[in-house]
Image (cartoon, rainbow, N blue to C red):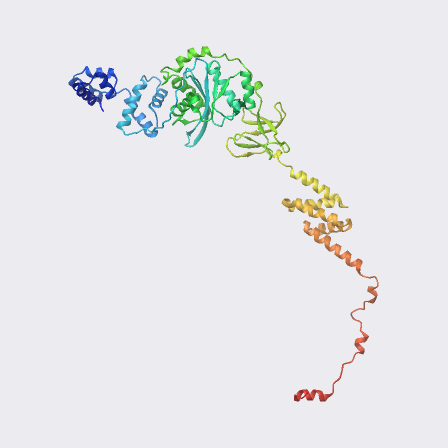
Length: 520
């Protein structure tokens, strides 16, 4: 309903006897707007409506830009449009309500509907100044300048009374050490420490709740003791107990991060802190109806003072359990430790260096047992070659032990080395076969077989076995032939006297005649 239609409807309802308050409620307008309309007669109202339609609006120079934003990002809020305008044109003097009305008009005029998502929250009582801060994590996927997509992670803090905020981003998943570092940065940003910190059940800080008794990760426990922090962990599936930070996480995602192009984590954080000063902590809060930055000026007086501590000395390394394959899990990847490190329930201590290396220590105070370049992907095995089994050393020792069983050790070593050269994948099996023959046959046969193999260049265990068995058969034949056999054997060219003295049998001729005539 446009302004002229509203004006005519007001006139009709007045004639029907409606009171002004009832008319305002029925038409959904404020009383000041109603009184403003009633001050004008029909010609004045028509002239005013016409002037509104033809006059140039303050945001008209930015109309094409705003329309392009709304068409490209249909879920974009008027609040984010307002923030983007201030970011690009700091000298622009316009109210957020003006931007909101202008965006609504553009959506109607150019048929750009807004995508909406709803969520219900439960109201909770306001807390005293300095009493509490809420902390939570979030992540987004941002488009990069080259058209790719990058997953980003952030941690957010909000003071529950003033709604004063702090946030910090990383282009990789957070570690416990990152959490501690960002806590220190947040306390410095606030200029003090709240009396209670509210968290979700995040594994970087909380091992388990254990029926209300918190079991913290070793490193975070050390830090909390050093800082004397009072923690409160929300129950699972209870987002209302930290609704303020839930709202902040959504605010950061949709007002700051949505539709921005990622140009590097340093620039992204710098722009994020500027956004906090310009919008995040400056914009009037919907619930308190005050600017967080204004209320914070009083609330910071109620925070505990921040005393300098040495982070490197106040925290121990992050512990990781050694797996059976002598690796640890860190950041969704596996990193190797030296063979033999694994023991049941064995833990090692890890820390990150500023130049992106993961250090692994045997105990909290050392010594260092491994160092790896941190991989920021997922599901990869990062392995130091020195942590793998030295298979060549084992084969060398095996060759030496078998070669020593031959009379000619150097010749045997040369033979076995040649087998390793030709059959590297099966060298252990080859040596085992040869070693077995050494147990079954005496050294004389073994040495002869070795000599035959080297002379004929037969470099395999099967050839060695065939030759040694052949030599063994030859030796057995030699020892089983009687010594007088050679004397009784006659040469092939001599005559057998019995053959000479043998004569053929003779038949009567009448027998052949009977056969031919068919007579028996």
